[in-house]
Length: 277
Image (tube, rainbow, N blue to C red; front, side):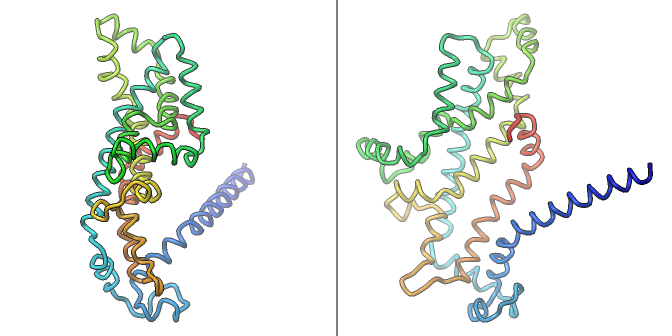
């Protein structure tokens, strides 16, 4: 019995050691970014050590002064709020219809939704750009916001997996009490789906906050630039301002980390209950 217990503890210690090594591997680039942000520009390449020899916060001030930081943050927050709102309005509704409602062609529509996940987004860049240019959307936030109000295949699939696991007896009991399908969806299904909705919200927040390609394609006015495009301004013709760039990256990364830490409990539970691998 004692040998079995020691063997079990040894295995758990080995698993934890492997996880710690993996975590260190992921955190090491973040540590380099963080400590470089506090280094004097002269020490960034002259000092091989991780910790700064001389701590300074001047890089953070230079990062804010080198670009209209508050404007870029405001633009990014507008996109984040609208995209998360559009995703949470459209995707749960479609997922619920595909999971619980019986209607002709439902399986075919679900297969079409899955097909959109297999289509590389690079294929649609040119036709979508031509479409938005034709309707006057290029140079505005519309191409970056409107598509989210029509659903995203991955989020629809994720939420459908959750709604499928909810017993039909809840809907039947509510229907016997005279509840309409809309009331069942709003007052029963959505409250039960909070962990899954939190997972989708975190995914969409990170995707919008870190998106660089789509704003670069559709935005041609620097007053509408997002923070991810603003970081590119540190790459000049005569080199890169590594200290201010790393400080700006700290500003850029911090909100995503904070949101994940706040929503971590719901995020982990949402992934577990949706069966996501």
